[in-house]
Image (cartoon, rainbow, N blue to C red; front, top):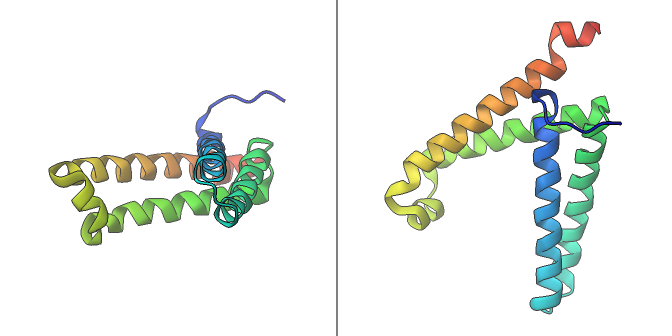
Length: 126
């Protein structure tokens, strides 16, 4: 099995990157923060997202569908943050609108292309 980055698996690679970041967060919280319950909860989420990434990269249809809906929800989250976010607006200040617009557009394009390459009529016929 060869893992390459294409439009058909961009959200799968995003989930894999998120898994790596969450694994670092687990280690940081456990080792540096000296917490034990919080990293266990983060680890459960990490295992779930890691499995979605792994099976998405192996072209499991169920994982592809879940990853698509995660991308769709994340895109909507970024869009609605443009209008109602207080925390990120305070954090980024004047750069909030350009950053949030770019993130929303990139997520929308990636999610749309992921859908097109995995769930279009041509893809289903193959």
